[in-house]
Image (cartoon, rainbow, N blue to C red; front, side):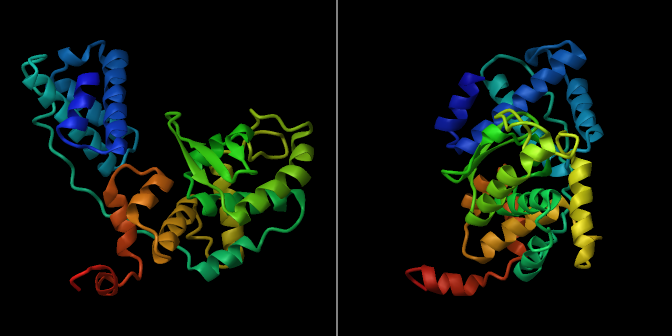
Length: 292
């Protein structure tokens, strides 16, 4: 693994994010081989590769995600063949799936402001406003919101550590409105909802049983508020994440920064966001290119 990563870095000039993604994909496949097939990387044959792709499909992974993993593993085994570590590439015959184009839906800024004004000043309202401001203000995935703990927040410095299901983390900034909503929720509602003092390992978003909100619970909260402004059928955690991305790009953000903030590995995701913005390419070219 170390030699392969060094090869990608020095000879292929891959970015840091790409190196992390390759390592994660290979380690994930290695766990599959060990747990499900009782094999090592070197012993893998094509039937193992097929079984792995089928398992990814069974986990409802997107075609883009599966294709990325297959491409990473194909590159890895090409390296092993060239190094003489194995005599075959079990992924050479695996065809990549044709990606589905995900439709990106987002709220206009005026709609988002209307949504954020809905929660009242009750304990539940303070929590819900903090939830909405946090999700829109960070672009966090719903899984990252569910896993968020008090110790991951630094309201004073204005940043938060987000963790995915693989416990991979990234640090993103917290804007003024999200910080204020979170601070008010934690100081005025959290302890009474929990029934005890705030501790660093506590989940941030909880219900009245002091249990962490689930994915389904968050969806229900969002849908309730969405129905109040006539968008209940559209209201999902992904809508807030997509709105975060589109609004950043509309206001002059770049794809590389957006990738860092949102934690997506496939740049085609960023390009899909770019496609729905009102950025005028000709105007950008005339303003920025020295020979325009």
